[in-house]
Length: 261
Image (cartoon, rainbow, N blue to C red; front, side, top):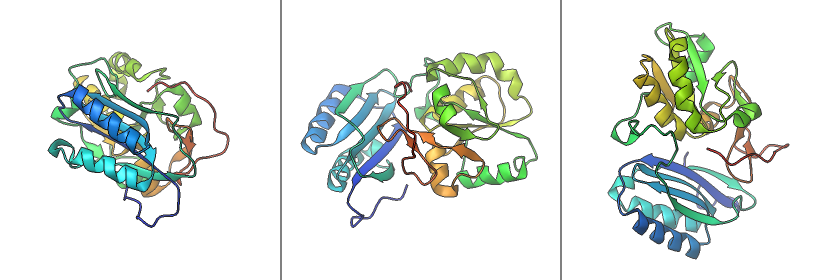
């Protein structure tokens, strides 16, 4: 998302960002980032693993810019481009920096997006495919929701396939059992911001599914670029705003939901 201007209306800046890249000295990263975020009065979560970084932060414009400058000072993270939105209040209760085995848990260590990602389709191109009812080669398109069942219930693409997952690590056995169902189709995986699809699309390729794409930037990027075309409902986000509409603002009727990814 294009960064908010420095003269934007008062509010809390919310950012989300991830990158699959080899990281070392994780305890050092953890200590430095926790100290800086506490001093800057930022709140949210940063996940660190040998495979990369995944973060959700909220605070003042100055504080957000400062922590991004720290991250981008490392050449491996120089191209971080977070999605941004404004909220009237702080959506997180505390600041956590955690070291994990994976920044998004799949339990398939052979799937390594940091060494190369699956092809991505832009929101504009996906909308054109859905308008036409097929991809550029005339192949029927299947949309596959990689999110959890409660997220799917709050909003998703019309006529998508979903596995009724309770957690993302259930995705791998579901795909491995049902891979034959996708033969002859172009499959586009999607999730909130794209991180789950980085692994999901690679896993599907490994299962022998020939035509697999991931929606670049996920649902939130789709909302920003093309609105709610072919999409019904809102998009669950893992903070106290809970459900965002296609205008990237909180919607009415938010509900409490289990904190799984």
